[in-house]
Image (cartoon, rainbow, N blue to C red):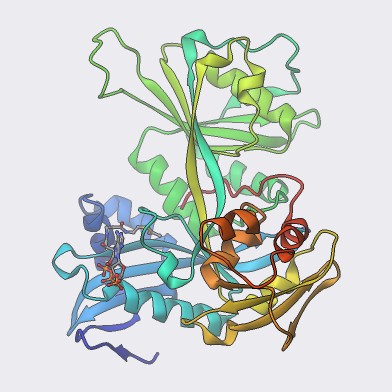
Length: 409
Ligand SMILES: CC(=O)SCCNC(=O)CCNC(=O)[C@H](O)C(C)(C)COP(=O)(O)OP(=O)(O)OC[C@H]1O[C@@H](n2cnc3c(N)ncnc32)[C@H](O)[C@@H]1OP(=O)(O)O
């Protein structure tokens, strides 16, 4: 692995196997969390792959870390593309703003390109960090808070199966076997064994976490809610009840979602049910007699970096309308820069004059149909040579249903 030396004196390269625990300590400290216990690390280490874990080093001392796991994303039209799930990014507080993240991002993206990851995706701790590296916010979700004592499902909401709490030792095997059949929604991602280790197995070990699974008409698991119950520290009312936080809510269809919501609002001794990462089109308000029992906040769900722009553009399908030439400017991965003709029958490189010019980051915002080109042009993010191209791009990139990832990492 080649080492890149920046003027800061830091070097950037993959972390040796025996440096992974130190890398995890750096990440946790950056988020103000104490190091993992030996027992917890014994689980967490299965989430790491040394060849996908990058470090920033000052001499021999590691001062920053960024890892990824191998995954795949379902794109509009149904194809799945290889995707690096980038996570566990952190820099020691005494080395911040010296280019540690910049060097790791460059090394990681070059590595993703070399190993054939078409996409890279992440959840950002702060929205100001990643667009400079070509990431763009590509999917939105919402955090839904349902005031449980006030929530009553409308009587016509159908029942489609049964909900059963899983025993702790059957959770991972049951969910891991069922998840692939839920992965078809545009935006969904594969959950490899690394993900199950650092998200589920770690959480089940470290925190009191329960899973209620939905069994559909065929008797197979077709959805679940994974949740924890925690006190609300902001609530001064000594008689207040704790809140139920839903960390993973998967449902093959609305029938499974109905039954799982019915289960959640039926749990006793709960003030609020707070469900994170819900799709923007979750119809929970319409399912309740009193829709005022629901509060909802917009969340920035997933950031996308198109590592291989030609492959990513070629893999998705497009709506109807006239083809449009889009110029892409990508300073970090310059092979992506160029002009692409995008039309109902696919994409090709071209030398024709562009109607629109975008950065890699803005192209990522358009890719899953979450944002309209006209809106982004209106706020200065798209350079427009031909205004007629804006509605044409909106028709081409439109999707039937909002893309939704639904996987935290
Ligand atoms: C996918 C995930 O894991 S998300 C979790 C990310 N980790 C965290 O939030 C943990 C706490 N924060 C940190 O560890 C660090 O501050 C990091 C990783 C966010 C940034 O690391 P640094 O080494 O300081 O970044 P670096 O010096 O390379 O900064 C590059 C540029 O990004 C900017 N930047 C860095 N962090 C931020 C931020 N949080 N908000 C806005 N801009 C930022 C810098 O100002 C700099 O801008 P410039 O190029 O115009 O000068």
